[in-house]
Image (cartoon, rainbow, N blue to C red):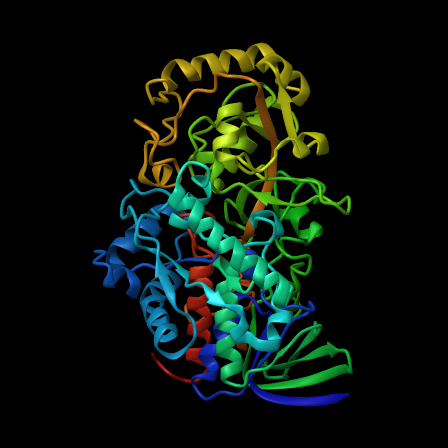
Length: 566
């Protein structure tokens, strides 16, 4: 068996793993990253790329007034009895330092989402914006040949493969047929996209999570940190004194015994694609398969199993073991089903959600995590399939799109033929096609419309918070999230439960060290990203509550391994 020595071995190449690697390399440690899949980037490369980090430098530069005390109050409210004071305090202390480090020392640069509100902005300590940041768009050509190993974005959230940024850029795409300025903006982007496809075979204007991973990977390569792809970890190596000193890694050239002098970081992305653990921990998936995750197929819980094999434990007491998101399943050309996470359309005016009872069950513009919890509760009370449907009329469909169906002028009828989009000339006809109670659906829509014409929603208060409104249509008055559903034909898209990452990771401490069954640190073993138990207590407080802690605890792990205090 071949041997390889380094100071730090990082298992997994998502944001948490690469942040650990970059931070350790800048502390003059010899780092190796190993990744089981043929591409690097993990779920992070497919994600929206937002990072929730209070008191961040971009926010301070924009004049955002925040404090660690206020953020702590908010997290304590959100986590409830699962509030982990030590880890939360470590996150709030190190988060702003990590952002400053990446901005000053690496290729990772950030943009602020000034109106990207916390998901419960009216809760104690909540904010109307300023805590969520995103990686600045990145030119993929800077990765040179390594761009071929960067995981592509999730196809379903691109337009023909072109990545679209959040905020103002997304608004330009919605307004492309109504504004010459937007049409010109989108045309320029599309011409650049076509140029990149012709010369490089993939987009070079990287956005969102793809930009985050690309910037971190560029920073790794700048510090001569190798990323071994197609290199799954077989087992961790633990000495008789209990210290983890490396791992055995399978590579194309055979197994390699890797010695890591300072530590091993588990950052393999949690278990969203592990049906066995899903069966045990996802209430809506009694067989482990009633779930559709946009995570890569390789995120099968390797990090958790590696830790458990040497005495680590998984946090299994959280009220939610993953970050839930409603997803729909558009058919692909090869006959498989895609996974489309519904982030934006829920908030648009003229869109409501119903179960097969024909009743609404939630403020559709609330966070996707809250939406799914309400969806599961409603379906279990009805004792039916855990699913729901977005309902919209023709005007709304063509103005905003619905799920994977794009707004005008993109054709929508192919989605009807594929079975993804349901159409009915009347609400009763639509109800028959989706298996819903037609009389109740008509009553639901009539009751909703009576108030929606005035921009009101007394039943669920859609549009009542700054978070609701931030994803609505600012040009629609008086409520950017509410409009009647009244002119047929009518349309529906079926929703099931998916995730944006698992919360139930390995128990760890404020220094990112993995804990054993007795709650003591396992020397030499660290966890970051979704391999570590979430500090959010099973809740979802704001945009980027997985990636923000991921890069922060990656930074913390490197700091601890190097023996530094800051």
